[in-house]
Figure 1 (cartoon, rainbow, N blue to C red):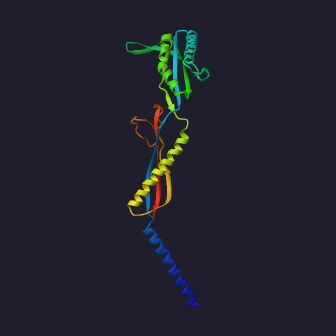
Figure 2: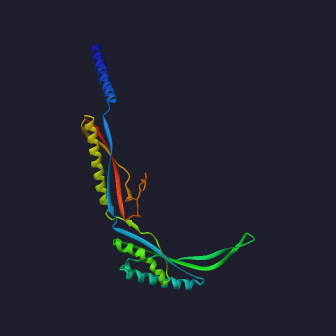
Figure 3: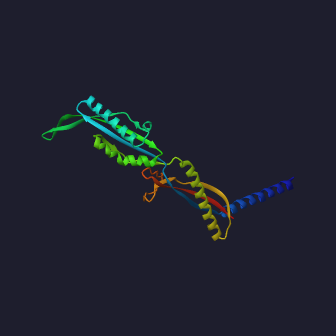
Amino acid sequence: MKNISAVIFALAIVSAAYFLGSAYIKRANPPQIISVTGLGNENFTSDLIVWEGQFSANNTVLKSAFDQLNNDKDIVKSYLVSKGIDANSIIFNSVQTTELRDNKYEAGNYVGSIFRGYQLTQALKLESQDVALIESVSREITELLNEGVQFNSFPPRYYYTKLADLKIEMISKATEDARIRAEKIAENAGSNLGDLVSAKMGVFQITGQNSGEDYSWGGVYNTASKNKTASITMKLDYKVD
């Protein structure tokens, strides 16, 4: 019985030594990993434009100001339709009313305000895939000044409706770029590239072409340029055999 116990105890010591030794070897010789970052970018032209503007009317009588604004609205709408824009695509926002006052001072002290009248403002918005047409209208809209309309045009914003497909294509390019880099590093080190361990996507960026815009950790989404460059990075970790 004592001999059997001694044998079991000896086997336990041998097993423990084996597993401890194996664990030490694994810690001392961790798997070799190559980490690489690949880049995918693509130039594209926006296929959707959004343009906004506003016009206003001033009068000391609120109703008169409102009547003038409605008259200007008809002029603006007729002008846009004459340029080839579908009347149903013109979105007019609600009228904003502002009471205009001048501050009054006596001996350097504020004593109240003087009523100057009302200013009524109405904004409009156009969204179209006919980018060239809206661009042209946004540049020529100052012609309305000749008809007495105080129109203020804002810079157009440019978007791309196939961005999801473009992003998938760019991820594929970035992944392939990273894999080629990893293969070259392994080859130069006299090793073979093993299995992919992990893959992480970086920030998706859209900048204007030749704009000199800086990249951001949170991502850049340019809407000011019609011609843009989209880019994305992929970080891959490979085992090395």
